[in-house]
Image 1 (cartoon, rainbow, N blue to C red):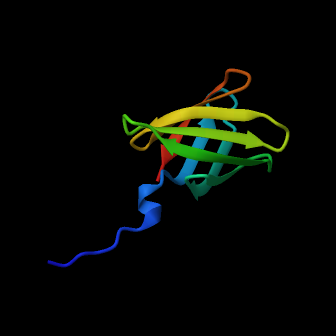
Image 2 (cartoon, rainbow, N blue to C red):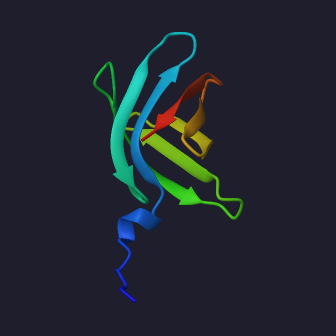
Length: 95
């Protein structure tokens, strides 16, 4: 039997994220795994965050920009839903 060592990155949640705010259509996008995810929005702000896998196999995401604003939410499979400090909803996908 042939055994292959599993990549550590394949076990960490993350990938390429593309998320859009429902009303203003402002987009954020970026790449990362686990504790090191970096997103950039259309206005040039950098959002840094992390992803944590939960027991039900969903993934919890938390992001913060340099001005202290935050985005938090969950993903199931490839769909992600986030909410910001003002209550606006952001939806998107993960590749």
